[in-house]
Image 1 (cartoon, rainbow, N blue to C red):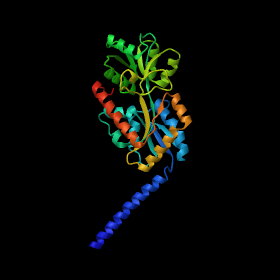
Image 2 (spheres, rainbow, N blue to C red):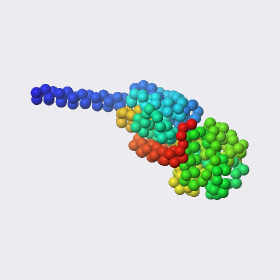
Image 3 (cartoon, one colour):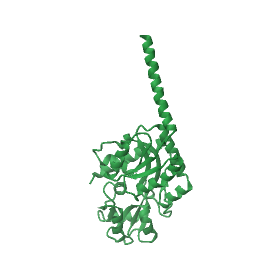
Image 4 (cartoon, rainbow, N blue to C red):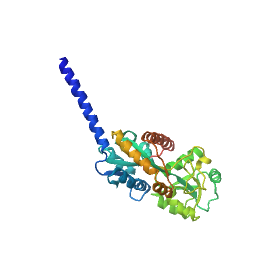
Length: 325
């Protein structure tokens, strides 16, 4: 009996060691084939651009093709689901962002949990919004805009690109923190919203810098503030909203996630290469062109950032009683 027990323990220990050795070997040889970065939005958009900024660098450093695949649908949930159900071997990654942290609260019946089912790998970049007004609006600074809004509650028309978007949540957060009442005007995307702002049909907009910067530089729109913690290199003379509404921060961010149970060593390899890429002068210059800033760090730091963003937007969504369209 004692012999049988010793044989069983020896066999069990050997099986565990073999399993660990196999996982370590897979991690050391990663990747053995092409790697996919799945994007939940159409090609050419901000999320897609973030993936295509980093994918060539990863292809070179990993020694395998890194392919960007667009799976638009369900506000990004279709792509997230595809990665959640993919093998946890590092061959399928998710280009994740603020929309994932919003969707966690916005959609009540998802068949996955982003925080639980997607492992944080690496942050890529943060893109602030620019708070801008039509030249006809009698405000050239945030204090003037706040004074105008408080003198005309519910009258200033602020355009936004769809319910539950980062722009929408950014405006709702601003309303809460600044204590103002604005008339929110929804559109099917940033382009039609921006067109009506340029025509003076609406008075203001919270818009990603890349799509508005040409109109700002031409004088067709007046920038009041950016929504990042620090000033944007793309608009260095524009103050931050945090200067006037302490603690305010909004906008989009992008990073890479993987299916849970992906080996730690694989995650560490991708994280190391992404961070190295973010320090490359060409990638830094490209991000600056887009009005973005790099957000390097460990996978654990990225995970804490995701948790913080999820909690922050949960409070906004519940306080503003936002529901999916």
